[in-house]
Each structure stands twice: as structure tokens, then as C-alpha cells.
Image 1 (cartoon, rainbow, N blue to C red):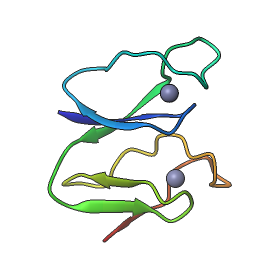
Image 2 (image 1 turned 180 degrees about the horizontal axis):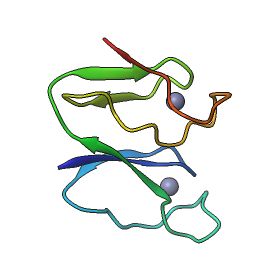
Image 3 (image 1 turned 30 degrees about the vertical axis):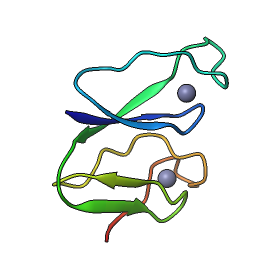
Image 4 (image 1 turned 45 degrees about the vertical axis):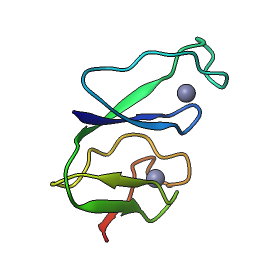
Length: 77
Ligand SMILES: [Zn+2]
Ligand SMILES: [Zn+2]
């Protein structure tokens, strides 16, 4: 199971394989998923946008609207 984050609306879901579903904020009408990696037992928080993700290892960079580098700035909680 992986953490998926929609870069258009900010929805975070834990899902086996890429989730589907309608997204109001995405131009295509579908969520624009970024795969943040496998779900684990450690919580990581992005310093820029505040997104929290459960993962055993540092989550993938993904896409962060609030970060200057557009990568999430993960720190272990
Ligand atoms: Zn979305
Ligand atoms: Zn972020």
C-alpha cells in the first residue's frame, strides 16, 4: 500500500496501486496523483505545507505547492 497525494486538490490517500476518482481542482477532472512511497509506521511532516505522511523511510519528493523547490521538505516527527 502506498501514499498518494493529489497535487491539484491536496487529497492524501493510502491505496494499493494508483487510485482513481474525480477531482474538482484538476484541469483533467481526474486527481493528479504523486506517489509518495510505501505506507509505514513513522510519521513525516512537510515543513512547507504541513502534509503528514506515514512511511518507514523518507517519502518521495512529490509536488509541494508551498515549497520554493516544489519538493516537500520532509522531517521525521
Ligand atoms: Zn485531486
Ligand atoms: Zn509540502
